[in-house]
Amino acid sequence: MEIPLDPLLRPFIKRIVIQENSLANTYKILPDTSVVIGFQLKGKIAVCEADGTTRGLATAGVTGILDKYRIFQSKPGTSSLIISFQETGAANFFREPPSEFFSQSIALSDLGSRYSEIEEKIMESPEEKRYEAINGILLSILDRKKQDLIVKSAIEKIKNPKGNLRISEIAKELNISKRQLERRFLTAVGVSPRKFSSILRFRETLGMKLIGKNFQDIVFDCGYFDQAHFINEFKYMTGLSPEKFFMDL
Image 1 (cartoon, one colour):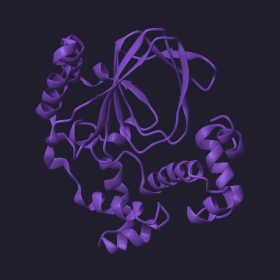
Image 2 (image 1 turned 135 degrees about the vertical axis):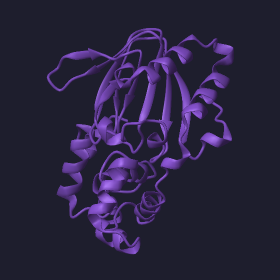
Image 3 (image 1 turned 90 degrees about the vertical axis):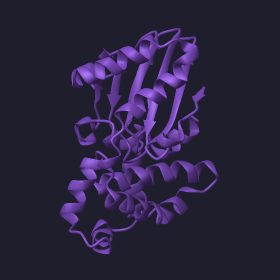
C-alpha cells in the first residue's frame, strides 16, 4: 500500500509504502540509487550476512545505497513502512552525509536522540492517522537549504545517456573539477558519480531485458566494454549470471 505524499515532500522522497508479509519470506534486494528508511511495524526482519549468519535489524533503521545484492528474511506477519528517497533527497533529512550509510543498515537510534524520537512518534501513531503523522514528521526535519543544484544537474546528465557519459565530461560542462564533483556527489547522494552511473546502468539493463531486448543489444546500448564486462558486473550486483537471473523470474 502506498501512502500519499505531501506535495512539499515530492522533490525529496520517491514513495512511502507499507509492505505486509503474512508468511515467512526470504527475498533479495538489488542495487538501486535510493537511500531508504524502514520501520518494522510488526514482526521481525533479518539480513543475511556474507558469512552465512543472519543479523536481526533494528525496529527502525536507514539502509544506504547498495552496489550489490543483499538478502533479507522476514518473520510471518511482518509489516514494514518503507520511505524511499530521491537520489539527493536523504541529504535533506540527515545530519550525516549519505555516504556514511553506503552498503549498511544502521539503526536510527544509533544516529542520536532526534531520530529515536522520530521512531517513537511513527511507531506509536494510530494506523488511521499514520499518513498525517509521517508527512508531518518528515516536513518538520526537512532542510531545503541542503540541496546541491550542481549534483542534481550532474544526475540529469548521467541519466540522459543511460549512465554512459564520462564523469570528466560532465564536470567540464558544469564548470567544476572532477574531484570537486566527486566530493559533492558523496555528500549529496552517498556514492561517487562513477558508482552511481554503474548502478543506474544496471537498472537500465533490467528494464531493457524485461521488454524483450537481447543481451547483445543491452551490451551495446548501455555502454559496456564487451559482453564479459556486462556479465561480470551483472553477476556482482545480483549474485547470478544474466541468463540464470532472468530464467528465475
